[in-house]
Every structure is written in structure tokens, then in C-alpha cells.
Image 1 (tube, protein in one colour):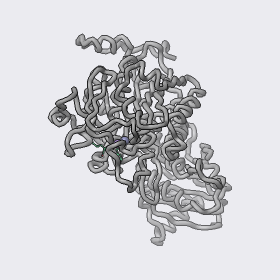
Image 2 (tube, helix red, strand yellow):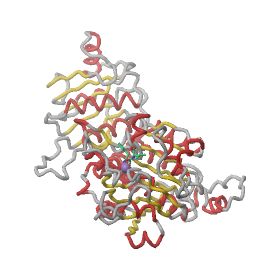
Image 3 (cartoon, helix red, strand yellow):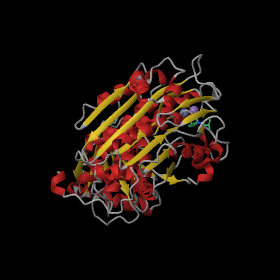
Image 4 (spheres, helix red, strand yellow):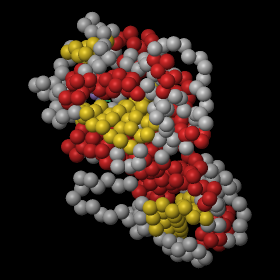
Length: 512
Ligand code: BES
Ligand code: MN
Ligand code: ZN
């Protein structure tokens, strides 16, 4: 779908020719004597239209309105969340119809800021996405163009452009999440990363089994052993900052299919384990958005990708492997494989002397039990980083919730035969998984997002959500707006010299 931003007053909206005019109507609408405002007032007064978020009134060939179809949709108080609800409802009502060119009118909103614009465009993009990669008949998408009407396009431009970048990133994450495991192998994910490297300032480096063995990633290799598909370790770089700026590292779990391995999963709904690479897909999506938005910071994306399969060569419960960090791991359950691939990626991240490392993973069923599909689980040993991610989630309506990391949660990870076991008891499973990862993340500020409940939907609406691309990009853009942390400071921290002096603010002109 193409988007266009246009300045249109309510009276100009009336004469705008299109297949469908979707009008966002707030409780506190300004009075006007144009056909649209009068119609809204009349419908409200007669009790035929309620301005609660998502409530609809539809009309066809209305006098005084040039659009073929008219949809009034309530946005209540007009918050970004209400706007998302409203646009989702309106786009749902248009589905199955014949509308190709839609005008989304935000001109009746009194204070539509960047977050409102973003919510509207993202909800539109979400509704316009359709999966076709493995269907034999591909119907061309009906909805082709959305014109977003506001009272001042100049004021809304920055929010609009940011939202367009996000729509592309989210669509890419959804697409790779949705593709079945035989159409989204580790090699194919690496291909997607190579494609991204065509965008400005993005580079991709792909490591295979030989290179990974040389690095000593014994834990990652152990998971990949049971599959015929060769593993890939994907390294993406976005160089938007100065050479000396410490990067943010994103690490995405890229298990392209998780059978559980020898600790095999039950058959029911096992197909959904094709989504076990949604962390990886969110990193690809974030890079797609970075390529569009070109913010001034450095970002590294790391994706350890392989299948988790049972086989004659597969790892067995009780096997002990040596991770890249040197720590030995007793694999008591081969289905706890996400942490085994992530731990080596976290160790690899050390070489970038990062300002922060955020890993994103469909890590535990326990996180689904704890938080459901509303908020992703956020774990971090660094309060400032946790707060930045929580804030980014609120701003982008891609929510997360901070979970604890008390050391007592690690008690169950003790092993008689290795430095650490890969599982603890059943209780607090999302936290014990995070505690395992934390052992490998001691050398930088670290956060972990467990997206097991939020990355995809099951049931009739089965499909990837593209979360948490919006959260990640929102966070990265906020980092780009701050003075960058030079690499040297990160280095000093690494050798654990207490560095109290804050990083010198950089001169803006130098960074341009
Ligand atoms: N990919 C799964 C987590 C998962 C399960 C996400 C169901 C969404 C829905 C992960 O690799 C896994 O199997 N985790 C185990 C860990 C357990 C063996 C400690 C789990 O959550 O059951
Ligand atoms: Mn598993
Ligand atoms: Zn898994």
C-alpha cells in the first residue's frame, strides 16, 4: 500500500474523490458548517453514531460527500491507542469490499501529534499486509493507496515519515515470521539479511558452520547438530553514527523450527514453532526501518539461526557442551534451546564494546502464561536501559512489562556436571531462562525481551504480529537523539575500572 500525506480542511475532505473516506471522529470535535461536520453532528444527536473508539457508521453515496463510501469512526478522547482501535475497525469494515483508494481523515482531531499519526499509519499498514508467499493463486491487494488527511501536512510530516519506515520494517518481520520452516531456513534468513545490505549504511556478514566452530560457539552448534539444514550466524551492521560511537547490539533468536529436539514437543500446535525465529525477524525488521529512517547511531544485529530437530546426531538430555564464553552447560532439556543459541551470540556481542545489548526471543511458554499476548516480558539488570525500553514500548503502543531478576531465581540452574544447567524447575520459567542468559551478559548493559506471547497470534487469525519492531525502532531512534557514548568508555567499563565521569556530549556539527 502507498501512503500520501495531504493538507485537507474538513470542507476540502468533503470534495475529495476516493473509494472510501474514513473519518476519525473525536468526542471533542470542533464545530464546523461543512457537510461532513454537520453530518457527524446530526448522526450523533439522533443516536445513530457513537464516538466511542472503534464504533462505526457507514454510508454510501452521501450528498455533499464526493467519496463513494463514507465511514465515520469514533476515536473517543483521541489517544494514539484509540486511534489505532478506530483505524483497525474501519479497515476491517472495508475488507472484502472494493475500495482501492482510501482517504483517512484526521482533520477533525484537535491535537493530532506524531504519535497519533504513527498509530493511524501503523494500523493501516497492519491491515494492508497480506501473506501470499506460499499460495498458488495470488489475488492483487485491493487497497492500494491511503491518503492521510490532516489540517497541516508540514507539522505531521516527521511523524508520517517515521511511521512509513516502521510499516516497512513491521511488514518484513511479519513476512519472515509467517513463512513456513521449509521456506524460511537459516540459509534463507541469511539471504534476507544480504538483501537488507543493499540499503544505505547496512552491511551483512554471514558465518557458516566452519566459522562458528572456529569461534568456539559450542552451545549454538550443539542445537544445530540434529538438523540437516546448516546453521547460519548473521551479523548485520547499520553504520549511522561516528566510527567511535559504541553501537547498540540487537540479538534475535532464529530457531527456524523448534521440534523440541530429543525432548520432543507434543504434536498439537507444533506448526506454530515455525514462529520460533520471530526474534530474528524483528531484528531484520528493525534493520529495514533503520535503512529507511537513517538515524545517526550505530547498530549491530546478531542472529544465531538453526533448526532444533531430533536425530541420531542430536544432543541428548544430560549432554554437556562448552559455550563460547568457556562456561560448560548441562543440557537437561533439549527444548530449552533458545538460551543455548543466544548465550553464544551474547558472548560474540562483547567484541563490539556495545553501549547496550538487547536480545529478543520467543523464549518461554512460561512468559505466555505470565503476560499473555498483551505485553512482552522485559528483563534487565540495568535500570536506565529497562526504563528506556519501557518508555519506547509505551510511545509505540508495543508494550512490555518488567520482570524480576533476583539471584535466587538462578538457584535451580545448578548442575552437578557442568557450570550451569539449561533448565531449572517449572516455577518462574521465564525468569529462570533470563537468569541463564544473564550469566553471559555481564560485560555490557543488557536487556532481554521474551516475545513468546506477543510475536504471533494463534487460532483463526494465526500469523505473525511484527512485534516488537516498533518498540525496538522507537528505542533506537531515542538513542540516536542522545549524545553518543564513545567506544572508549565502554572499553574502560569492560576492564571494570569504575568510570564515574559522564560521556562528554558530542558536538552536533561533528556528527552530521
Ligand atoms: N520456543 C519455545 C518457547 C515457546 C513455547 C514459545 C510455546 C511460545 C509458545 C522454547 O524453545 C521452549 O521450548 N521453551 C520451553 C522451555 C522449557 C523446556 C524449560 C518451554 O517454554 O516449555
Ligand atoms: Mn524449545
Ligand atoms: Zn524455541
